[in-house]
Amino acid sequence: EGCGDCGVQSNCLSIMPVETEFGRKRVINQSSCNKDYTCAKGFCPSFVVVNGGTLRKRAGVLHDAGSDALTARIDQLPLPAAHAWSGPYDLLVTGVGGTGIITVGALLAVAAHLEHKFSSVLDFMGFAQKGGAVLSFVRFAEQREHLNQVRIDTQQADAFLACDLVVGASNDALQTVRHGRTRILANIHETPIPESLRNPDADLHVEALLEKMRHAAGAEWVETFDAQELAEQFLGDTIVSNILAMGYAWQRGLIPLGLRAMIRAIELNEVAVDMNKMAFNLGRLAAADPQALNALRGAAAPAGRAGTTVDELIAHREAHLHAYQDAAYARRYRALVDRLRGAEQALSGAQDKLPLTEKVAFNFAKLMAYKDEYEVARLYTDGAFRKQLAAQFEGDYTLEFQMAPPLFSYVGRNGEAPRKIKCGPWMMSFLRVLARSRRLRGTCLDVFGKTAERRMERSLIDRYESRMMELLPQITRSNIAVAIEIAAIPERIRGFGYVKTISLGQAQEREMELLHRFDPIRYPKPPAGKTASAESGNRVRSISRPREEADARG
Image (cartoon, rainbow, N blue to C red; front, side, top):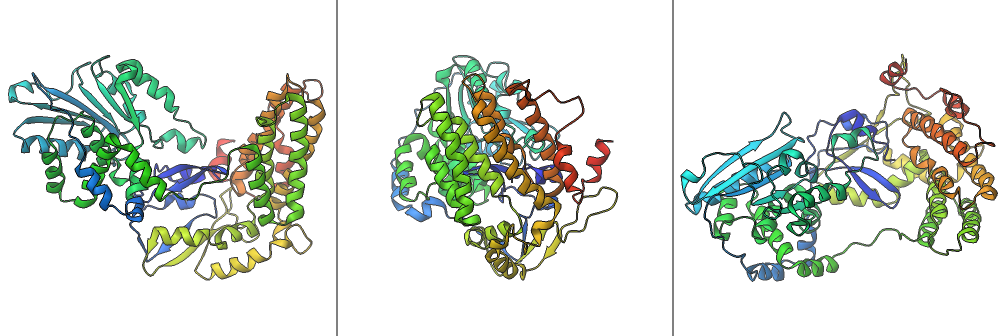
């Protein structure tokens, strides 16, 4: 659901945001997960414990497409221009703790030693060795006396490898940069920050961070790439992304050391030598011959996700709702979307760029495809989950499902959250039966649909449909921007159980504010402290909030 409750419970940065055709969701980065499993306390049925299995090493594109030709191409790569030193050479490496930034500095120092050069490495890790900001000051010199200090002085960096944008754009890092001198290589991959644990929609503002770097060094002195994307797609593991970045920086001439010394330093480290050497060389190839990588990427490219035009979005959601329930359910969705589309086209004269229609198409489908017991069962048994599981794990393993369906979950006392139920491998057989029973949804035989939470979810569909039809004749060029915001309100309604109840109240507060802006006369401003959540929140009495939420609200 993208509610972020797993991040709230665990405070773990291994819970990564992932953009999907259904919006931003969450995925666990198995490469960096520290296995404390507190994320499973998140009130969500998507957590499955794999007992007895081991992580499968993903081969990536290099394995799928064959690496012989790639190896030959790497051997033919040109070497960067040799450095002529008149004094020390200063390189700043920044990133996030626990991802190998310290290792990069150590490898560079070993490589310098192998070339009979002098070096110093000063690492600043703060108080958080994993997940915190790390700055590694690496200095090289031909003569020992040139290294009179270990820290890079203000505006004295010759090169800057920013393996993380947030740390790279910090004042501590940028104070070493001189305009027109320091060459910056920035990894634009969005690594989660603590703010993303509190705010599921947190935005790193990548362009703003890059603009800070360009302002400090000069636009032509800043180059960008995505190390994690390359590492995951071509090698199957992001753990080597910073070694890949080091190879990219070396090929671009930011590291004044020889190739033989760099490779030998990786070998002497004696940790995943073959994979790290391949990552380093992959970084070199990405810097020198990106067309070769694009050719490989095209040869093993996965099937694309749902289209991004309005027509493609509508068709995708209509098909999804047909699979979710039936053809009649999908026709109900299409009827509302077509009404809004016709009105917006008449108002704007546009045929393709229809932001209101797009918001309604996205959000009405979101409300209609609420994840009840039948839908959770369908998502687990339609084959996609098994395929994903087989791609991630191997060995003789069993599954344990952790769920809290409203009909069976135990609601704790004193405002405690409902407890999850642990179900063994037998649960998969039950889920298959349940998925085939989805036609019972909304009928008198739907025992799950009688709970307060399911009644609330069905009422939200009716309410949204009525609201859009109510606003339709009032939409003008002057208020359509507010109408688009109103149509997007369901994006704020996320989660399950008490998490959804809380987000619903907040969403309805926002809806009342927007309705007042849309038409102040028809929709008076609500009195301070009164929210729309009372309208439907009272119908969800069986869904408790956790004790800390109750305490926070007095």
